[in-house]
Length: 103
Image (cartoon, rainbow, N blue to C red):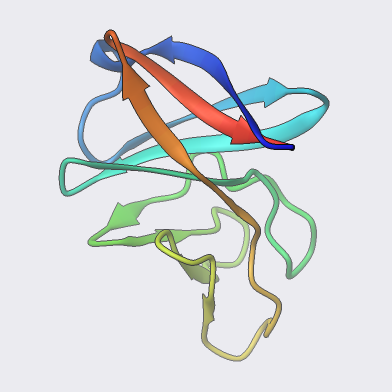
């Protein structure tokens, strides 16, 4: 069963910013791109580096280590360094609090 868990207040995350959190032992990166919230695993599938601090452009985040880009909408990678998508999580805002679905 998937349960939403509170992360942090929605007002604390600006556009084109991200914040790493841990929920139920899962490292999650919450991103806001173009005014929309996304949540992905905070781990690049190329060399296991954290995605936190990566540049957000459009609906993509770039890994700060080697620049691999991932689509925040579905986790799919761009380029040749990896073909493995980064896992994504459902995210919502309830009463001003960002919540993430973790299983």
